[in-house]
Amino acid sequence: MEGPVEGAYEATARRCIQALKESDERLRLRPEELMLWDWQVTYFEAEKGNENGGGTVLLGVAWYDRAFFDDRRDAWFGVMHQRIHKDLGIPMDDITVEHWAVLDA
Image (cartoon, rainbow, N blue to C red):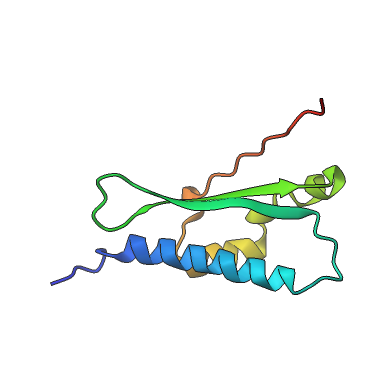
């Protein structure tokens, strides 16, 4: 018999990936807004040895305007995103955000 936790990690990862896809589609339907960012890469990295399907969803975002980035860089921590993370079953402690900058040549 399947336990309450078995499969939960895989289901959470699938919900996260689906939510990212739906968010991207909604944003693309708003052509009147400047798209000063773009999802460059999103993929799932399975946790080795985790039979429950757990792992990490990696989302790479390219920002095309420094002022826009500076204003929005911590959006992932805002109330809206916190609610989304909670609804998906992702504890805030499990979220890591790293920002990298490309230097002009």
